[in-house]
Image (cartoon, rainbow, N blue to C red; front, side, top):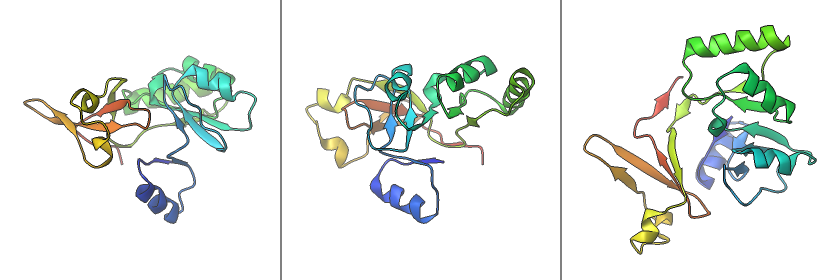
Length: 174
């Protein structure tokens, strides 16, 4: 499973034979618009579960559910989530313990996904700094970041004029 942010990446991963691609089939937490005509949707909030419950759609919960125990994973599954993304804050030992506890408690294997590569989202904001600087629309033609004395934090701009502040360091669990 791969999440991509532009059409070029989307075409590349399709050529590689990857079938589960998150691109235009993402409904972030606090998003007011739902994705239609998709077989699989990556969701970030409980309202999406309610919206899609009677539609023939595979639901995958994203990292923002912060799943770190078997009860929350089972709860999401009981609501119709087909795959549950684990919290990126878990380490290997916690993941192993979580899987074991899930199997022992529910006598079945869990339906987990986890993020293994990329820049983690540190914050989602409805505030767009480019709009405040009278630079609205410049996000489509350039790359922007917030910097402090230690690191640069890339900004990812969403179609609904919200932003995601990304970690300056790339997660690589491969």
